Length: 411
Image 1: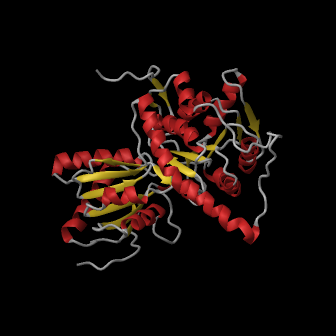
Image 2: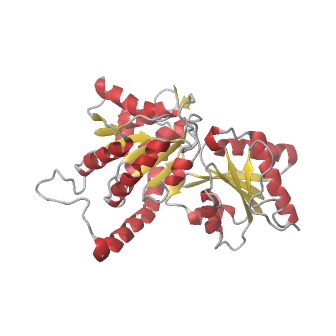
């Protein structure tokens, strides 16, 4: 008999509403926020839950996103369970304080509804803001749909607040494609969701006057290096905690998550590596290509962008002949950030595949199943030739004449 999980009835939620419901069930103490498209409904909904008595918390309206994260830092240091949400330019304005939050080891949960960075101004989704935060010392989880936006927020509290971690966590979802698209979601009951996260147990909270502590001390060359090394170690060591939380979440929900997830990779000869909603598009393309043309295509999805799962990525890809790494962000005069991460992971592989980089979907440009198939077929051509037969970095879905980037020798 199949195991029965304590799930509520099916709901039809978009990604923003799903994330806000997770905040309600977590009984967040403080949300300090400033609205920005497309993340506004997350904090707006939390404010409604407070106003209507569904949660005993505080919604703090501030004058900017910099102030929002500053308010979260203060509330977390004081011993509260804290969360907020932002996107794009708001995230950029938060960056200074993101480093404060991670350096102080404060387990804040930040919902980042991914959106392009200006200029030119654009309110649609790409991963520019996700990449901007990759070196800020935060754990970064990525949701591919509304169900996962809900699930990852619940997991984020459990991960960040774990006493072996004590680090802030971002949960990413694609702007509009996930945040504003209604899908079936199967939430946990309020009791099960809260019990999964557990009561908040503060560490070194500033309101514990029996044990005074200091936050934001100045260290200079005497101790700064040691503090950052300990912070980095905690971030890298969080990998086992993340795995454990995902395993525990499967027990209560029936939904299985991993830091790296694979689709049709058992016998794959060519693969796409991607983040966000693109994963589902590429997975559909892989299945159709297998059925229609016999191309052994697969997809590797990065669920945990930080700490980056180098070993799991290497293990997933080292038997593949050719790999396309998809970056939904302008590379800024380099190869794409995800391409660089994946290439570094594969550097120690015994059998390294050919690796190419595609920049795609900037400013919300659609990424279709047919385009994913084209990329898979190009990888098959590389594999058959035994070398890269096109430019190693390309723009996918760009209007107008082809733009070549890093030229490679053809066979």
